Length: 326
Image (cartoon, rainbow, N blue to C red):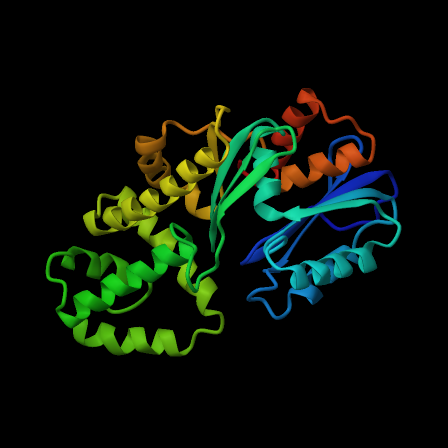
């Protein structure tokens, strides 16, 4: 996906979208073309021990002609101690380069609505909703992490799918046996219960990054739901109910203003899940830009590029052509 690496000498801006599972860097030239794309592992300081090394490693690759950087980092604003560490890592790496630093969901909300009012629900490895009135006031719902939160996230969907699988293997659930064969096959496990049980325990015992591995299972659940697997559809319907509660709570926190909703995160690329939420909250607004676009839009303002509607439309096409769907 990344263009061939080469030195960038013309003026450019950059953005970083630092999530729980992966971190993306995009460098954009002043003519609107992409100069560089890089990706590394997750940079959420709550559960990624290597977050600082990964973040600073990306920042050190920026061209010397970079005029501004927009960063949206998972976990930012959730702990004063970790916030200070994130700010130190960014400021030490960027030196004199101007930058803006916010939560990754705040950045995704700005991208989705182009800075206008709305509530953005994100479901990736974790989950959160972020609402903005477009005038600087905002609120958040969720984002409590996998220990006692992240309802409707890929992690919860994957964990619920594993729970359902184990209940079927144990004989505790005899109603959803239709889930056993397709889900075990998606995990490359035997579908025979006698063979699946030890294979599942072996899979579990060899996980290097349990949270990411469990979250990755949500994609299988989504595919099965789209294919008409009733137990998988039930799992996604439950996730939709949780994410609907996020949206409704965000709207209640900002009364007196009409807040359309939009979406971000790999989990919400599922049409089934989006439609299940729409049945409760109304149809979503398609995001104007993918999350990384929010960081580029902020950086463009800092660099004095005046990102108007035409610029945003052009950026959307550019990022879409590079493989970043909204």
